[in-house]
Image (cartoon, rainbow, N blue to C red):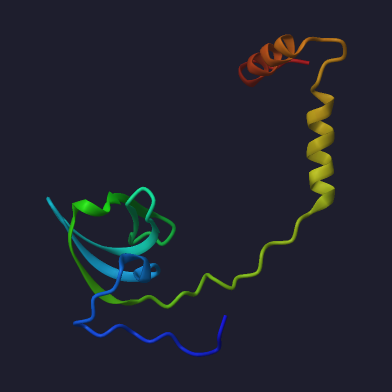
Length: 129
């Protein structure tokens, strides 16, 4: 990745939809208008995925739209990304080993996979040992 800043498109400049990934846009469809971020574009299937942020920061609306249904796209700018460089959480291997051991302890000895599946399904509803 280069250190230079990506230039903002001119207002009159026409860009291919693929160049707008990560940008805020106003998309006019045949029956409505959506303000969202272009999340992904698949040229092979001619689909565009739009992500609309909701007031609750953890929720989003996702729209999958065929590009032929798009009448107009208006560039609104690029959103500052604050979540891109967050470090991944550390993995607690001791907890993973505990979960694995607990799962292995639930497996019956000398039973078929069908019988084990049946036991697992019943044990979700009724206490079983």
